[in-house]
Length: 165
Image 1 (cartoon, rainbow, N blue to C red):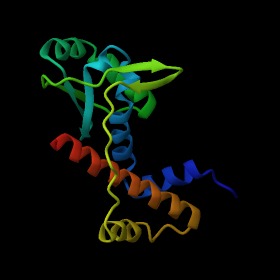
Image 2 (image 1 turned 120 degrees about the vertical axis):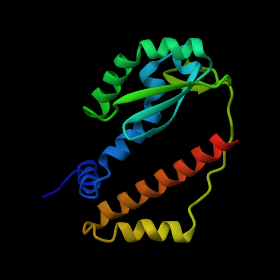
Image 3 (image 1 turned 180 degrees about the horizontal axis):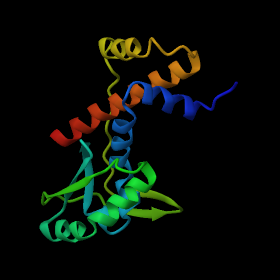
């Protein structure tokens, strides 16, 4: 019986107990689409831990405004990610400027583009992921899981590097 790759990956993630973590990390990447303009021009989701989404905001005025919308934002996020995935949102006024995002032909385009070079994982880091996936019997699911896990880890490392700058 053929199983769609999406279903197989989700099943594998569930078996390893990391579905909720993956869904919570997706919330960070969905932020701009969920809040839309102009809120996405003055805020950025930076991480999600324990069901709490942490969002940096340009100033305290916007933090207060988004706090008033928090319940609706959480409902919208959970509609896409699954009930109970996001439990709270914490806003932090940072005073920093955010890239101006404009709609162009259905795609979002940033007017403040940063070029960030992706750093591949070390052999040791990649070996850990492969070791973690060794119990997946289906070769195509195993390969998809390894690619997914490596991309996720590279993204996390890159995001942490950006936040330190």
